[in-house]
Length: 176
Image (cartoon, rainbow, N blue to C red):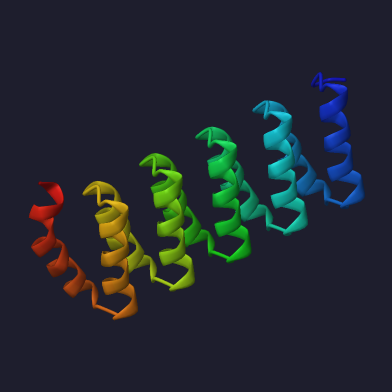
């Protein structure tokens, strides 16, 4: 009543609150995201499934909510981001780095999947992740070049200094 939810949204919200047994603290976070930021029902269902079915902590939930809502991710990108965050268990520190790269620099979904696979599946440290992110985003690598660079950096375990040297050598053909 107080927040003017539609009946459809009310049913979605009720199912999340009741059937999955959210704690009052988590319920308040979820309610604030749903109501105050006016998520569409489709996005609401995606967000609810991520929050409830995969059991995000409240801290991670707040980070995820801020990325989803404040920066306006599309539902397709939201699903990719959710799968990376939840299914592969990123730490909150790494999650913030990944979120900043995904959202602030506007990666395409194809590039996002490549970046996510490199970050998560090969276990980059946060320091190396920042280097890789800067190379991917700031210098605008093509997806083909990105895969080559990722394979060299990750699979062969280059030191961070070597990564910078590789960047300096590769910078001119990339930019031109």
